[in-house]
Image 1 (cartoon, rainbow, N blue to C red):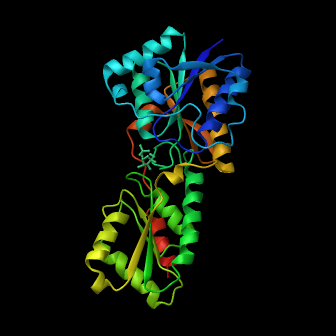
Image 2 (cartoon, rainbow, N blue to C red):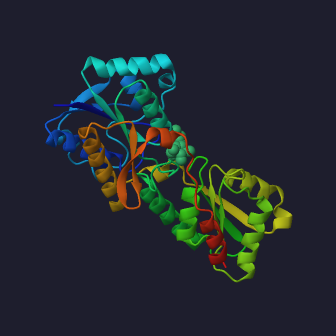
Length: 323
Ligand code: F6P
């Protein structure tokens, strides 16, 4: 019999619940005792931990967010915080922890595993900026939400001399902007990885009109030097010369809400089950990631030591296709 706890941490992502469900039920199937930690690392420090059975995770696969709640804990970044977190686990005899989250959460998980506590990670963030997994839980759903907005705005953007900017999340990674821009047929994509001058955005919008395009829409990553707010300010300042109006829509947290799509539910289910299998083999200290179609274990040393890159060839492709 094993006692294993599950927590979700950082920004919630659609599909986290499917991962919790798969981990809890796969553990219960082996006769293990499963626990849920509420509100991420903050809940681990305060000992907000409850046992979970198969029924406690019923009816959640279709829900967005996380039933365990999430948090960003400053205390956990301190040595004392982490010691207290481990104390909470030892107190109820938990022998291993599954951490569902993105970069910050997995860095925290690595810190615990360096303190000799068995931890397994599950790659989950809408940003898709976590090394060790080609796709993370939540990305596909977030992309589809962004896409729905882009498609709708393209209808409004069809009136000439008016351009639309859609700002998507992603922190300092341009993945969501790049992929939603390609899928939505945007006239311009602005990402943090490539510095883009506002004049370049203006001329690409102008060229779209000159080519007789029905709409002019740019997808902008929140982490870009010129994000939607900065671009709107710039265009406002130079409106006489630039010659068209601009409207910006900031998608914000809307992208993180909503029901997970089939891809995220299945990915999360596979990762949750894989985490339990990995612990069963007596292994830990690794992230469950999607790599070449399989769920593989990527050692934490590799995950935290590397930065995931986006495929810039796709940005070049987008430039060809925006014609
Ligand atoms: O990491 C996920 C994410 O949604 C980022 O895209 C965004 O920059 C950030 O979290 C927002 O954080 P918060 O929900 O704490 O405002």
